[in-house]
Length: 338
Ligand code: PBG
Image (cartoon, rainbow, N blue to C red; front, side, top):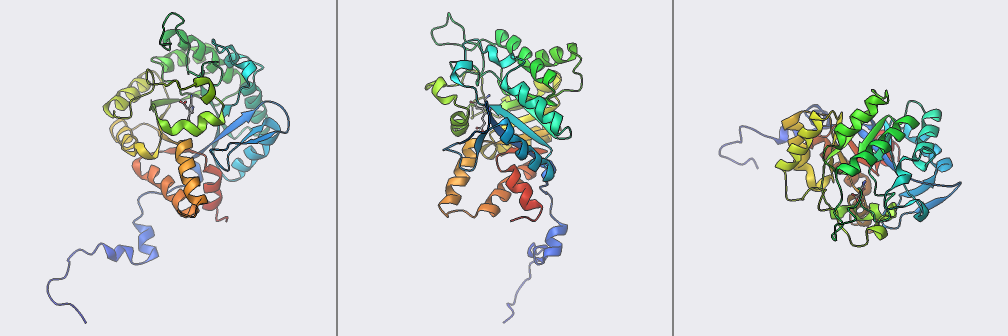
């Protein structure tokens, strides 16, 4: 029976009724072009290690990374982000291994660029994989609380970034949160003639507990030994501060701007994109990956639908690109694969 009385003059459900009209009014889309795939690399030959807290993510040696890079390229993923696993012998208080031209990262970068010149290679610029104390910078030996020194760290980061650029990195990505690092790195790169090397600044990087599984993956959790990064990474309570951080990195010459973590920080992604209008990226971090994987493994969440919804939400919030451990899965699904 037809109900009597006033009809709604606007029916939001009209456009939702059929697939064609849902598609016509869809505001955001996800494509393989939006994805950056983070990978963990190990020294040596033919070794693969699983990361217990990140099911499906592995640490691999260069020979085993090559087919992964090839797959990324086939699937249309524009770039890989490299994260090195450095063994204990390579970790020192001064992080000298970070700018060793024969080190793991430069070797991996040059081989990747030699084999797959069209695949973007992004390197992480931060000292934590290389420091015996697990901090992203150098520690003040005279400070009982082990304060991470800013300006001394900048010199180390400049050397690290230059070493990556010399090896052929397309993008260097400072994730250390020192003040003035973008300007210092830009000057160093330009002086070396690397005017085309892009800087992806982790501008709004929060002191998040969602990085736990990553620190297991690169083996820095043990070195950090209960320490924290509150004196340089941002307070999760703050939003205006993120805008100031991005504005500074714009002024210092960064090309791309990262918000990290992702899902709990969608408001920050939105503000950065809307207020500053810069190329905005978001990092769906290890803890977000672990949560989704755990719920999926338990049968509590639907794998493909939930992963794709989370990624699409980053686009809706304003992200131009997403760094995600799901990049290859998502790209495969976008191509119609199972
Ligand atoms: C450190 C770094 C971290 C991540 C990437 N680079 C963690 C940290 O600050 O300790 C986290 C990434 C993730 O959780 O997926 N330079």
